[in-house]
Length: 401
Image 1 (tube, rainbow, N blue to C red):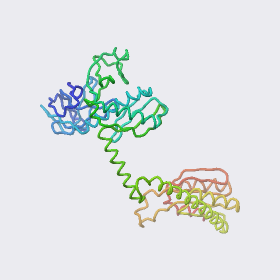
Image 2: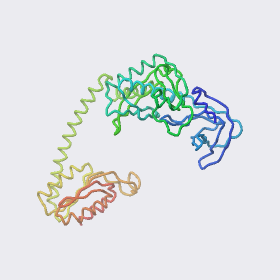
Image 3: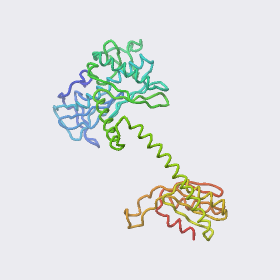
Image 4: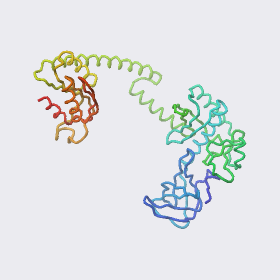
């Protein structure tokens, strides 16, 4: 099978002869005598396009090394292959950008590339380094963009395995079983690398590379980047978010951080005040429970939380250790046929606690947990946890009687 993409990354159309077309569970697997589309691999996604006007859904590699095209409809005879060129060209830019980043990272910092991936919006490269700080990213980005501006030519050549073993050619993942001449992607005066993907013919076509941010991994550091047309797309998304913030904060972009800082500080103050008020309300609620008759009492606070329940439980335990209190926080579901639809949907999460004498808590705690579809436990005088649903809250309340 002739692989057009290996010799000419810029070929957008071709004709091919259908060798076989076999129906399978999810469509038709078609073997052609020529292959225009890159089937994916090495971090680069597969191409898309049409075979005889039928969209290509995917590929399957045979043991022989040839590929089958998955189509939704059968084809036969001679067919026209039409490549999704914008997708291909974008991948050519991103993959070429990876080559330049890898070379510069090795030359500047001695970083070894251990993985690479082209995503839908951003790409990433993994380096064998515990950390790559912003200063190094900026230096790396500057060097890569200098190489782009130099307009270095790129071409496909071949070499034998011995050249790789002698260190004349860079190679990251070279299969041991691979035989014959190796496909080499060469950047004039800069790099020779074994690679099966598609690339540009000159670095100037890349225009720009932007290194975005990093992510720490157990085996190194992942660096996210965009190249070529994706740089402008990334800038457009950034400006869109900036405009949204400008409208929401009612200030210019240069004031965003100041206004957000003030808002966060105010939010923390309000949160602290709300927490204090909720704890005071918890203590007041405990006083009301203590005055209720009977050995078991019940409290449901829709706007409460686990910390509120602990405050109530602590006060009850201190003032009346003989009293059993069943405490629930969270918004209950509407009754069957009421607003919000039927009662079969799962209720919002909540919290629960049972406080009192040990033997009573050991009995009622698990029963409350099960009725609330919850998780939790405890021992001694307190049993507490999270409620998965409050739709059986009435049954919990009936445990008081």
